[in-house]
Amino acid sequence: MRDPYNGHRPLTPRRIPLHDEDLDEEVALAPLDLRRMFAIVRRHFGLVVTCTLVAAAAAAAYAKLRAPTYTATAVIRLRDTRAQISGGLATDGADALGGPEVSPLLSLVELLSSRTMAGTVVDSLPLLRLQSEDLPLDVVRALRVGSNSHVDSLKLQFGPDGIVVPDAPEASPVPYGMPLGNDSFVVMIARRPKVEQATLHLRSRDDAIRALLLNLSVRPRENTDVVDVRFSAGDSLMARRVADRLVSVFQSANAFSEQTESRARRQFLGE
Image (cartoon, rainbow, N blue to C red; front, top):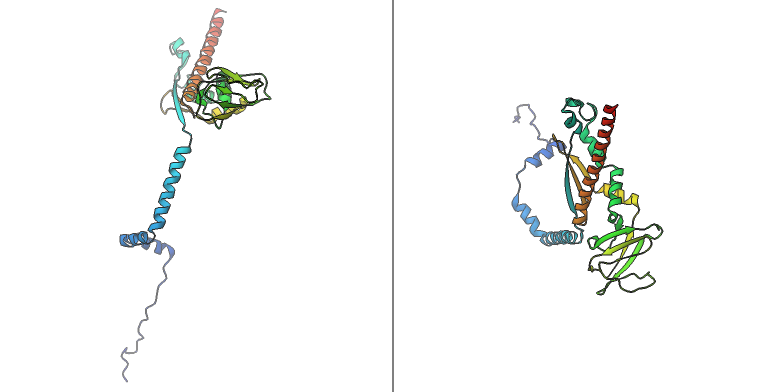
């Protein structure tokens, strides 16, 4: 019988394995099958709707329960008083305000974000030491810290006729807008809040300083001599007061430093 292949064996096709990167490239280059995708969504329509509703409800609950945060911004511009006094003779280019190795703008940022500056602001705004989980602090208008540091909380009950302190010897209502408290601190509640009772806590000075620095942002603007001071708080009025007070404290300290330097310069020239 005659050999149909004329002495040559036919080639047998075989499967060539593909590497993982080849498969990934083929999958990435494959066209998107919209019909298949819609069919998958249609088969699991109930699960898709349920997940969507749960995610929307969680987002709505978070937006409703999350306490609002307000941010106040103040601006400080760096000024070289020595160059103004000397007409530019005392400073020369990069040597102004501390020499070529010192950045006056970064020095200003460090000063504004220092614990010393924050402590001065806390001492001038005692309300920064007050905190409560039940009472919105925007109804508190004043705080005076006493000498007794053993009592650091104050329970209050709010009624139509005023505020009652259950731990006080006389539980008669105190009218809104009048001071009340204990040996540790005295507060003034401006109006009746929506809650029926609350507990105020007086935190230590160090805790108040740490909380202030945590919510404070001091950043220089690029290619300028301007520094932005931002402070965030749950009360818009408190955020604005802290930012303004920080700037005013810096201005007072800077003015005192300029006066001291000017006085020393006059004494030196007088000798």
